[in-house]
Image (cartoon, rainbow, N blue to C red; front, side, top):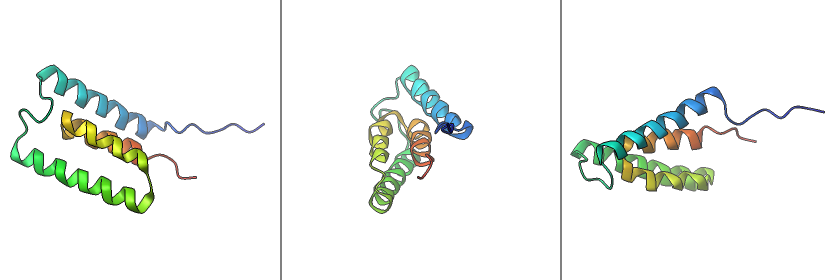
Amino acid sequence: MSSRRSDLTPLRLVWLALAAIGAGVALWRGETLWQSASGTEIVAQIALGLWCMVETMVRRNWAAFLTFPALALGIGSALPLYLFIRSRRIT
């Protein structure tokens, strides 16, 4: 009987924790739906959104589209979430 290795590596757990912390901070401060986003943060969110779309077309990683709703909470939540999704093991 072989043991199956977990998909939740320590680095993936860090990405997931950072995404949760980013979402928690945004909700705590009331920074939802781009209410207090600066110009540079909006540009970073657009760049992440384009990156997600291009990567999805190339890698067919449809779960990456979960990043788009997270963008409403800010780049501090969306970027770690995308890195968590993208860093899964390739089989």
